[in-house]
Amino acid sequence: MDATTAPHRIPPQMPQYGEANHVFELMQNMLEQLLIHQPKDPIPFMIDHLQRDNDYVPKIIILGPPASGKTTIVSVSY
Image 1 (spheres, rainbow, N blue to C red):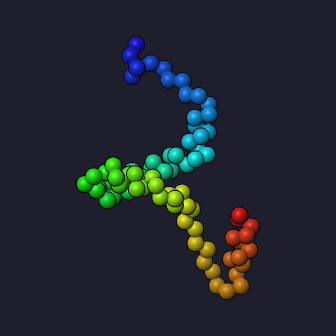
Image 2: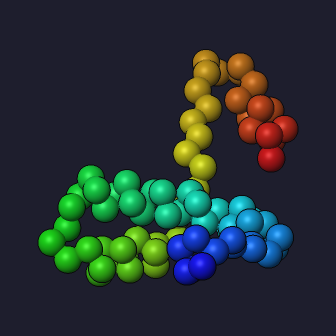
């Protein structure tokens, strides 16, 4: 049996680590940006992408008229 058909045993802490550190989202976002921008040299592009701090920043906008409770909604959410 070669390595491509051998059963794989994934330690239980591996998925937990990936989930806790948002690895799937990070890699998905990096691949999306790579395919959108299609840089001539993808390695420096990916390094730059990984060095940025803001890859997993939730993008949320709370809109509403004055006195509609926007501040209350935000404070309850966090």
